[in-house]
Length: 69
Image (cartoon, rainbow, N blue to C red; front, top):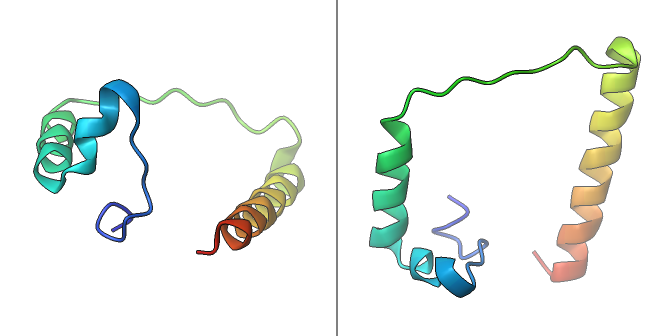
């Protein structure tokens, strides 16, 4: 989605991933891997999690509006 919309930027050694076929190959490779994710409970409990989520959403919205998305 973001790649198709041109919203991802790849630079330096990763510049080849700007090509759709190269990006699709990379995704296919990582999707074959078995992933393990370790996570700790939020330090501030549920209220802290909601507060942090709202703050992150506001920062993302501000960042996107400054880039013209």
